[in-house]
Image (cartoon, rainbow over all chains, first blue to last red; front, side):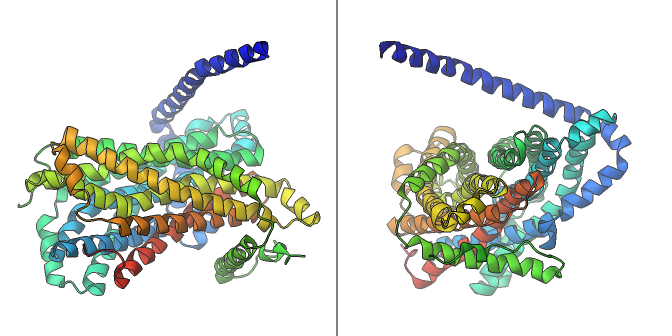
Length: 284
Length: 272
């Protein structure tokens, strides 16, 4: 009894010690993967033009069942449109409590570019483009297609990962532009057409408080999100193991990690860009 | 004998039909599956063991991501909101913004993210793996209703978890807002706590919790359905999990609007 107790204590102590080390090991391996795939960018862009163009089309339109319902761009637009409607409903009700519903346009001008679109579009990107990549690369890894690539002398990292990274960075700009329009349209539709706020009032406050820097900054956030999402998802796909079930688990793990990373990156970027005390101006 | 659950699964036959059928057929299948699940939910015997195991499983995959995702989510919103308040000289109202944003939207929406990203993907990967190992077929051969045995406990487990996760999110939201507002942006702690209930009250909390439970049920149903209809081979399971996340997001945002607006229209919440 005592012996067994001692052994289990020793075992759990060992696990306690090796746990953080294993985590560190995994982080190091991820960092190496990310560093290498970024370092390959010039070579990959120069050598794999055809694959690059094909991937850009694929990121925008998706493949398989998702392409049937419009691909990642339409899905992102749909999700941000509904998020915009939700924001419109919720802020209208809150402002009405304070008898300030005329400021709906102000809320739209501030909340959409700074919070709503980056968060929602980031999540949509992770769900559509990112986990699609994990599923693809995981399937390739499990069916030994990646090893086959290496055998025929193609470096799999730039060919599979770096090209996807570049495609994501290029495609995020139009997708994000659509997403932002979607959020604004949804917001205005709700407050002006459903709740009967005067359109002139809405536009006036929207124009007054809209700042071009906000839009620019949120595109900076979008590119940052695209890089992080695609790197994380390709890592989990590229290192998937354990047969078909392992691919499913890898996709789930990648989505969990990247949703957290999306918000962490957004927080970091928005604090860097907006923390300046002059970042928000009521007039001018 | 219970109705054969096999009828809800696509026959896997010729899919040469035009695009419309490819879109409509899975939707119809999903509704039939949902109906089957609700019927099976009230049919004894209830699978307590599976339910408890699944509750633990869903909690173990969602709690960590929920905490890690909740902190930056809340910090991001509070930070921006406080910038506005600092500008108009009302930073002491920081608590009201944080309370309002957390209870009404951040809690349920962050729960959506976790349900879609963590819970339903894990459920789909699990069921999908069983499907391609032909465990589901084996169960049906033994006369076990897979919907009652596997789906019902998972759906209820995710609903319970969504309810609790929303609470965790609100807790993180309010305390995170406190840290940000008070320590970093100069609100006074007493004012923060005092103004917290300016815009929200108990009905809003109940409203948020009900939405979270609905999101949990829908997310788990999508995960189970997509897992049970996944194609064979590694690409099949991967795609199933990928589509689960996408469909869950696609379903949950419209549901969120409906469930947000209806109680306001009926005058159950709002108007303090």
